[in-house]
Structure formats: C-alpha cells, structure tokens
Length: 78
Image (tube, rainbow, N blue to C red):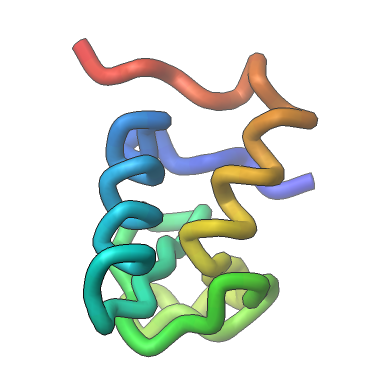
C-alpha cells in the first residue's frame, strides 16, 4: 500500500470531488508527491504522475472512497 502524501487531506479530496460533480473537471492526485493531476477518470488508479513519474495517480472520487477503508492514513487540514 502506498503511503498517501501529507498534502492530500480529506478537505482537499472533497473539494476536488465537488469540482468534478458540479463542473467539467476530472481531478486526481499523485499519492506519492501530492501533485494535482488533470484529466483523470474518477475511478482511476495507478496512472503515471507527470511530476514525479510514480504510478500512483488516483482519481478524486476513488481517493475519497479509498479513504473510508484507510481512514487512519488521511489527515484533516489544520
């Protein structure tokens, strides 16, 4: 299991999911470096990050759903 980058908070994921639901965005995140990724399918997992090259990009909705099973890994914003 990949450790989620500390910059990917629950609030950040929820905001990305909202942007996806009410707009035309398809946001995602690189779990390794924390970069935002655009044009990512909601259920994407294992896509290559343009920033760091790791195969850890995940769609925002998938990240939200995955957070339920890994609640201890996610940190709320300060």
